[in-house]
Length: 209
Image (cartoon, rainbow, N blue to C red; front, side, top):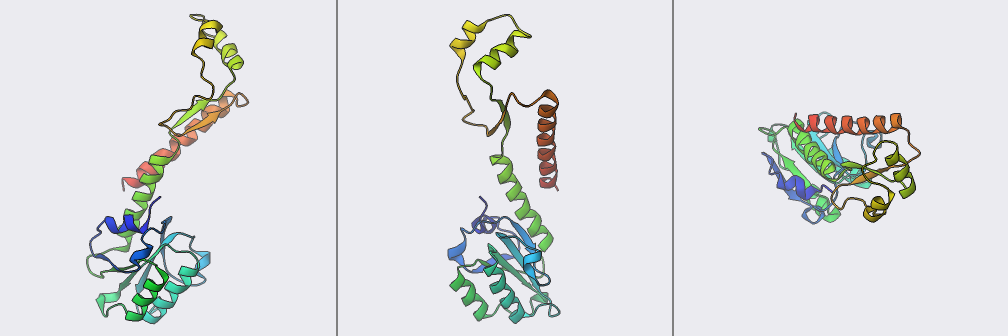
């Protein structure tokens, strides 16, 4: 599980935690660029929100209101950047973030990029998911079915030897495996494995951007 603490430990240039330290264990599911209301139509619970005070859509007061509203919708943290670093984040906003135990990050206007931050956060989330996702398939067959299939193609050893070697539900202690059962035909198995591998390649391609 990726948290706001992990984002802090990325030590991204121009990104500073200014409030809400007690909430750093809040889980992060993805990033969300704060734009127009209703926010719930554009974000998901656990999103790390990024908001620009541009003095058009948001001034500091409106950004503070958005932070509170998004907190109610379940954001994990709130990153704020102010055009040209024109003014500091208000004490009221800092105090509110501390009261909510909501991590509040200041993102320097010059030298920091929301795109870079979003990509960095997305990368560690995908890396975590890749490390913890299923990495193999397990033929969950009965002993009788295993013997039947064995006899159609291999006669070097027989049922007696197989009985001696047999381990029921011998799942890997290292890999996260998903069962393939006797109800699945060859085409379905191949399609499933190909689909899983293709999903892995897309995730790896994203992480290499």
